[in-house]
Length: 136
Image (tube, rainbow, N blue to C red; front, side, top):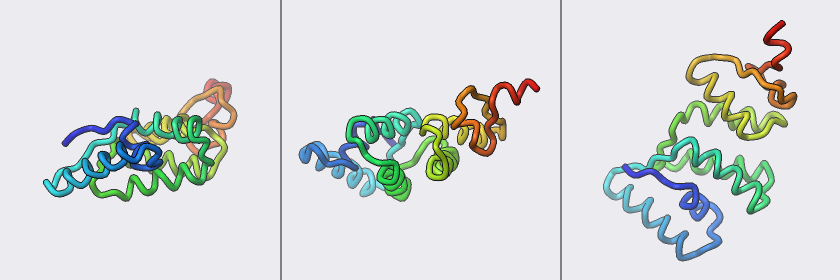
């Protein structure tokens, strides 16, 4: 198993560099042919959302679709996949930033701990609270 950098995921999704996109597809196919998978770290997930939003100016709906497609790719194994799925649900339903959704996804998936924040948009998510509410 190898780990993927964000730029490989970008090439798979955006295909803005056809040579690199073809190489990325060949890598996925080669791993599949060997019965292996490719690991996607949570840091690459965070960076991927930022790149798709900031560099490629993708709307939220397209970003969500991209993540769904990647999660459905059987050759890819995501670090903390339940947390990512939970984060995507928060991101789809709310106005909080993706990183805050991932933070809450990890807190909930791994330990059921609430997320305490100063960010009012993030605090609207189930399982998140403003600092003032947390200290009474």
